Length: 385
Image 1 (cartoon, rainbow, N blue to C red):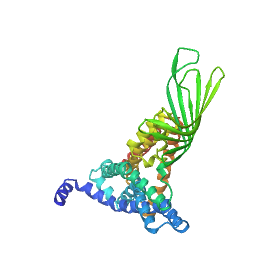
Image 2 (cartoon, rainbow, N blue to C red):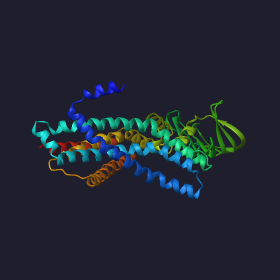
Image 3 (spheres, rainbow, N blue to C red):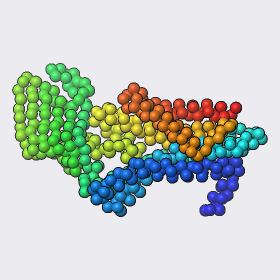
Image 4 (cartoon, rainbow, N blue to C red):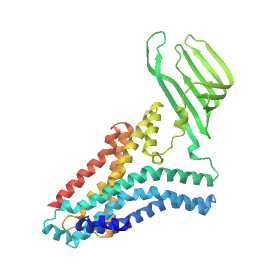
């Protein structure tokens, strides 16, 4: 295996191997540094507080911290790519090594190709981590922490569950029908597989309006219906008459959609791409258009976030390749932070426009990437002069 790997490496041009070797050292340093900083700010301080105030076992705190590591490792990849490429190419420029290569006919575009290839590999790694490892690790970290604190699992709790069902509804006093709201399901709380304080409005019957109120509701798998407990049904006839029926148990024909909505993770970061697509479909079916639109943006961002590695690889190598570029490690860190803040501020701004519906989800997620790639291309052209 090692011999085969060595033979494969020898096929890579010496120039590329040399440039990748110059990038790898600062890349590994930056990944470690950004991961440690993120882990300390995002998790460690909170776990220390839990240790002191809630008596969280030290072994559990260590487990939660290790399970949180993939999330911050993924966040560090794009930032480390920018730092490493900027620092490596600035060092080579300061030592006149890139100038010597240009003098023998090697173009600046050719010089940044290894950085772009390495950035593309990091993009694939980030996408893989973000879709396969991070959601499971985040969920397991939450479950481990909640169990240690003696609380119910986060996946079995929720508030203000709303589910809308649309279909063909006949207009009152007419034989015509059109698409409209048939049923509206609302539960104040979802706890351990049970809906609490439930209200259902039924508009499916022409000439009638029905309201079902119950203390509890459970999904009956065998009957494929909702089982309501301890409630009453109020039926309003459009001619003004009303009827009221109290019940201890009542089976109501409605899909399991409310249960699916209740069990959706609050954070799209805890979903894989397939799960996010399914969650978007559930929210759309439930009539929660804003939630569905937000998930559409988040699904696209699961692809655009890894692309930040390519964006930062292009910008960092182009800035570092400019003649006269001399950037120390501390200066590279400062420049990297400013560029990262600018890029993510742009991304968050467009993301908000997508969630509000001002821009389509596809544009809201990809425009920052396209704009930044355009800026990186301009920097590369300047460095090539």
